[in-house]
Image (cartoon, rainbow, N blue to C red; front, side, top):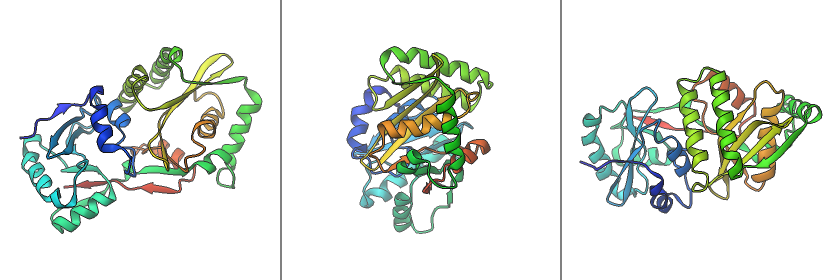
Length: 294
C-alpha cells in the first residue's frame, strides 16, 4: 500500500525537482496549481520508486490518480499495475484523469487496448498566442479591442504590481465578488484557492497585477511563467459591471509581464457554458487535450 500524504507548501522543493524544467503541455502539473487546489480537491501524493503518484478528488467527490510524475517507459507497467491494485480501495471512477497525450501514447504502447480512454473536453486547456492577446488584431478580436478602447477612454485607472500591501485588499475584493454571485460550488472552491495563493505569495512562483478604477480595487490577475515557451494564467477576477475591464486586464497583464513568452495557457472551462464561450471568443491557437482512463 502506498503511503499517501496531503500536499503542503513544504513539498515545493521536492515537486520542483520533478517538474522543472516544465515539460508538460497543460496547467495541471504546476506546483502552484496543485497547491492552491489541494484542499478543494484533497490532493495527496506518495513516492513509489522515485516516481510521484498523485491522488486527487473531483468536485463530485470521486477520486482518481493523475499521470505518474517522473516515470520512465520501462517502469510504467509496474507502476500502473500497483495503481490497479489500489483502485478498489479508493473506489475510483477512473484510474487516471488529467492525463496528457504523451502519457496516453506510452500507456497504449505498453498495455495495448487494455484501457478505455476518452477525451475530457471540459478540461481541455486553452492556449493562445501572446502576441494576439496583446495586439487584439483581426476581425475575430475586433469586439475585444473595442471594449478595451472603451475602458481606456472612459475610466480613470491605475495599474500596480501585486505587492504585500495589496494581498488583503485583493482577498477582501475576491470575497465580495464571490458573494455577489452566490458563493457556493465552484465559485467557493475558486475563492478558497485565491486565498491560498495570495496568503502564500512570498513562497510561490507567480506574478500578480492589480487594477484600481476610480481609486477602488476593481480587478486583479495572477500568472506564472512555467517555461520559456508557456505562461499560465491561474486567476483573473474583475468587477463585471465595468465595461471592458476584463479585456483590459487580459491584454495589459500579458503586455506588461509575459510579452516575451510565445504561448499563454488560460486553463480549462470546466464545462461552464459562459466560460467556454468567453475562452473560445479569444480565438485559441490550440486546445490541449486531457484524457480519462478507465
